[in-house]
Length: 263
Image (cartoon, rainbow, N blue to C red):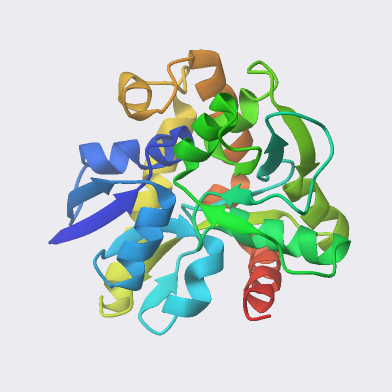
């Protein structure tokens, strides 16, 4: 059975899904894989173009009629949230526009959650792909922006300034882990097929976690950065027990986020 799969090129995604993509023994599936920025994946799922995908957690209320949220394969954790950065100083200026990595990303929602607690007016925002946000900060064409993925590990080295750890603010306010991403499967698939997809994702992750070296040539090839230590740190931060089993704390965090997305 052929299924379409969409994931990002980020090391946590390629780490989890590599064995599945390469082909697991006795798998009932053949995977046609799309690699794309998370906002692009969100939009593809909103159009119903992928059978299985790893997407931003906050988009799920918009697709829950057609997709099921899986109990594995996502990105939930502590101390791993998006960062609000500045290219020039250490004080946030609400009169300036802030660039976010896609309108439907969890990072965008977490920024709005933080902003609503600090300011009464609506934020000035614009959007770009996550790598473009970071490049804009480096070139100083962007003065304030929210960064995600590998750039969580490189901003200090690159001379940028931290304005707010948005994940830390979420944890402080909600007491729950940060629900960044989820895996979803189309509800038109049979229930048994969706269960098989979950088993494949868990098998793939278990294979990856058993390797002595978490960083493979496949992961390096797909990554947006060629620093193997950053890739290793990225995997260590974003891949955890929630990746294998969302669990009670993970589902509670997701429900908190989904309620917020309706506000």
